[in-house]
Length: 233
Length: 137
Image (cartoon, rainbow over the protein chains, first blue to last red):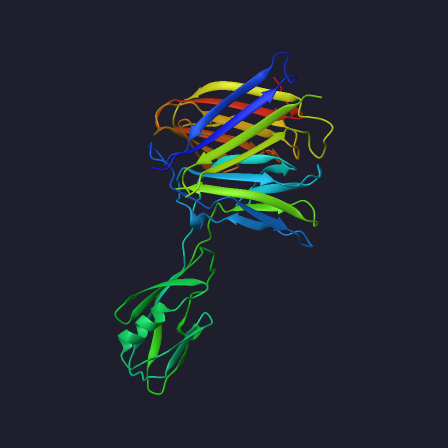
């Protein structure tokens, strides 16, 4: 089992009439257990240089366990005292991280719902027929619909993951997001076939946005850097 | 000026090489290197499970470099407190866990709300700030 510890030390010789000094260490464990957290993004650094100022998603809720004992570490690497990052959880402002400041906090990572749909390869296909979706074209190697479905499943889609069962491929969005009233339709995929082969999309389910992505906004357009790490279940 | 330092060390054997991350900051007032945070509120309280409470009863000045430290001193690993900012869930602080965050009490709803689960949780907290509006009696 991995052992990860987080120690904080708070010191002040002159804030109070007596010296303030305390330190505590937490062993970071999975929710409600004594088993150590097992995953981390590792330490990373993100640069912000955008005009106008733009926010960035530092951690997506989809990438951590909902209601897990996940922990977030952030540090503003700026050296200019007036520069700060405003830290948000979803749309709620947590606070301002000024130059050199750091934060360490638990993260619920409330997830959303990923859009899904099923596409079924049916009727008469021939070798050389194609199906294009999400910018990816699959060319049928033969006329067997199950084989074509497997070929489609084996592709890498920028915005979707897939699983296959016989001739039906289930597509799942990589990220949860509000899809409004739009559902993926058969017309979103382009079929080119010599016969009457089709790729009917069914069982579409709308996505719902996540509710606790970690977002930061720099205070200025000049270069600012944020150090960050997620330790998660 | 008051000088208060906050340091964190994260160590782990999660990776193939040992990980150790350290950071230390002097808690300054917003936008300055000349003046440190010079006010503090500190408490150690029992929080009964089930009811949501504002851990800071008064209203610190908005848009400052306010810092909040909270530790859950419960020894039962299944106990936790839920941290919520203006109805937005932040995370769960399980027994033994601590957090240190910048807080911006930017409007009347931006309170730090805690709710205990599992049983009575023992909570220690410290707020380092630049000024506050006390609740009138």
